[in-house]
Amino acid sequence: MIPGTVPFHVKLFASGLFAGYSPVATGTVGSAVGLLAYFIPGFEHPFVIMPACFLILLLGIKAADMMETVYGHDPAEVTIDEVLGMWVSLLFLPKTLLVAGVAFFLFRIMDIIKPFPAKKFDAQRGGFGIMFDDVVAGTYANLLTQILVATGLIA
Image (tube, rainbow, N blue to C red; front, side):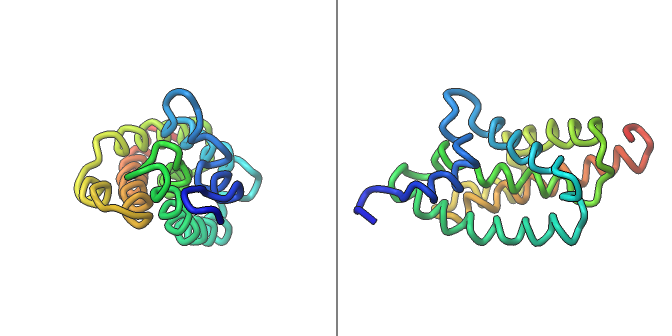
């Protein structure tokens, strides 16, 4: 690797298939990539999505570290964290367009407002902080969506 550069495959992965290079709303575009991947048949099954989340978390920490050295703290180009956060927001929920849409909306809100402890992770340098603030945001979005489903407000 040439100092001051990031290999193509790392950029491809870390940017969520280049969603991070969108001219606008990179976080929303990255979340949309995660949402689209979720609709691959069978992806919602816990034996598929949970290992995928774990793998994306581990690889994402390393890739985000590499991207941060070139692009600076928590670069907009890194959207693999949004992909992961979106998947966390959809865990153990019914796979319907309405539920997915609500989870997407709530995840974007939680990712923007960063409730505790997401803001603490966001302030940290490195891939761990980049990835974990979105895991927290996804967890909050998931819990809120679970409540909406459990109370019958959405199905």
